[in-house]
Image (cartoon, rainbow, N blue to C red; front, side, top):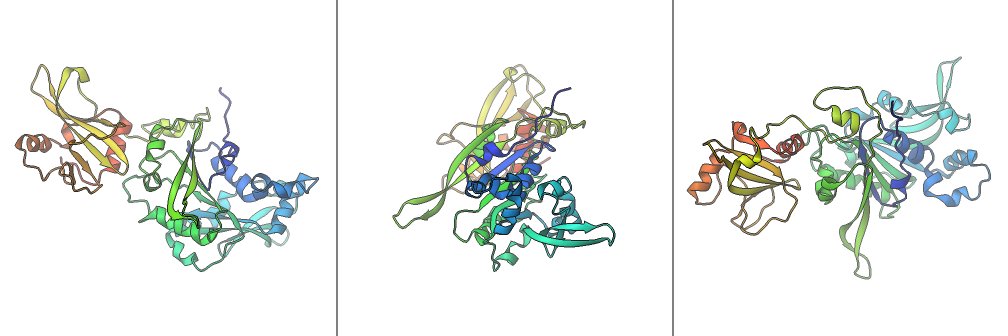
Length: 390
């Protein structure tokens, strides 16, 4: 049996990015690393000036607490920050060891996180030092007036939703997170943001809104990609200000989750989640292409080909990923608005007078569409903003 590889956040941390995204298979240690190194030992990795003055590194946690440095734990919904869920979240942390026997548990009080001691005899919990806050992104506006200058790290857990069609993300969610970040950082530029998630659905608003979709589309497991993203603001010298973003697709742990079914590769290996999709009934070489067009939704590009059998009368649509640049005079259906007549919104009612094209598009129906791969079909269906006719 292969040895399990546990995730280590250090390589991502060394990139020194303001915004960090870490995603991969479940149960590979992502959340544990964030808790261990960004919640309980904030200065051990980010503020070496504190370490230099301590001969005994076992005392660092005490000095961190005295310095008043804290974290903010973010979940998407209010129901996600129930006390019992947060306590369960910290269940895998050895509080006794981390605090050198000073505390033995975590206590949540008024959405603040405290180190505490549980007294067996009395059954009471005695709160000690406050180490963090827990907030819900859905009500980020409620925190706008607060002061969180003691926060160095913001950790957003499960930032990827199971569905990529927008139904389980908050409206305008990336901007809500940026509003919360602004509330905490107060234009210091020192707060680090950590987004942790599983490779559930590649259609994620954070990738699109932050201009990361191309990087994610080509990223391999075990790879860290960095990108400087413009803030669209300028300093006193007129220089454009950029923010460094680091994206890590965590390496396969090499250990099975012992699950079966259509999503087993996602759960066992960290592959992107995909559902079974229809594939061409014959080899691609047995068809001739009569027409090509492009779909461009939520940052994803797809090449759609209208195919006809070389030795028969059957025809169909075939969709595959497109990575190259869209050429001029190519018909594009997209959520991007352009004045060009070649960029259209409604596939079933294009504003183009071409009877042949309209006949082709009339055949764009569920039972006549095939996909290059299961992942291609899954992403296509989750990214388009129209319903495919039956």
